[in-house]
Amino acid sequence: VQLAKFIESIPDFQMVRQKLGCLVKIVESNLFKQPDCRDVLLPLITDQLSGQLDDNSNKPDLEACVQLLSTVLDMLDCKDV
Image 1 (cartoon, rainbow, N blue to C red):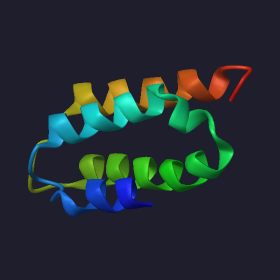
Image 2: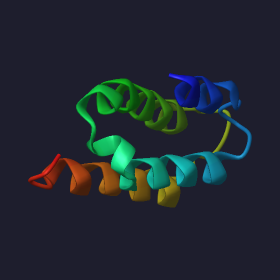
Image 3: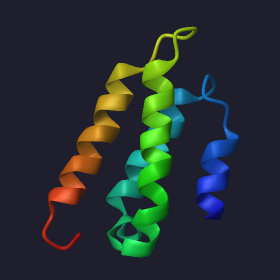
């Protein structure tokens, strides 16, 4: 929960690539394999992706968004998740 609050505290228009890269590393970690943690992290990740892709005032970092989405889908496809 604290990790989610930290990620949410970073404004959507600042440090976009770093924030999405951090989320990729979180998804790749053992933390994401735990169902309780994943229940908290998945809504956060989808909100962050949605916020980036819906933001008309700033150009979204599509490469970072695709990397995060790809990593999430790869992890959810694993048998141990």
